[in-house]
Length: 256
Ligand SMILES: [Zn+2]
Image (cartoon, rainbow, N blue to C red; front, side, top):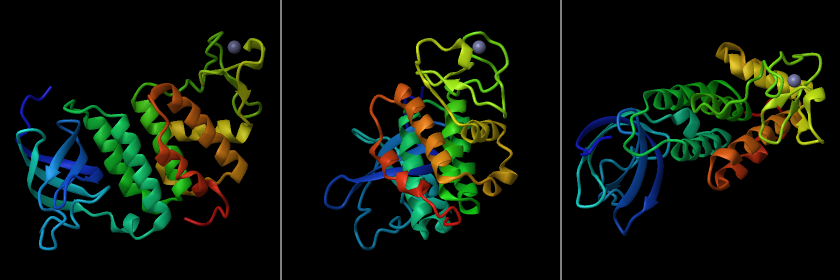
């Protein structure tokens, strides 16, 4: 735990909200002090030199000092504005949702270098793949990092190997995978082979091929729905921003 917020921190801006007429309340993810909410004074004024720099999914080096309540931003240097994301509607919507998810899945004042690197590297990856591929990849990687990803190799009931590519196993109500024969009274649904194989692919995370592996629209949505159920167990409330990315899973598949 960090008692006092004072210093320079590499950060990715997650959210900003109007605080009063001139000031903005900003939440950013850092490697050193978890996510952090601070006040950016005068950010809404025309001549603010930080305007345009402090925006969702921008990567900056922030200078913060302790305030009476929340820390206060005193300066910032831009590392990467991620213009390739900002200038593309689908990418922007996807990045805003994933930033929201990282906000929920990180803790204030708690250092988490791995979680920070995952988001930083993910943002660099996004303009090279399709928005839906990126969302599924980021959701799985974050589940795995948080220790909530299902075991894709072994049945959660009997512990024996799952069938793999030829026949998809059943996802139990908790999102763990089991053999059809190990299932009790129809709890859970079978994930189609293509959707299960895609999860196995995401789990290996060989990112060189992420952009090349396509799924039919129904299979994409099945993976999206499966991951959504998994997050329902973890998050206290459903994220509205997750609903706002649903349309990114629609065809045409070539549309980024
Ligand atoms: Zn089994």
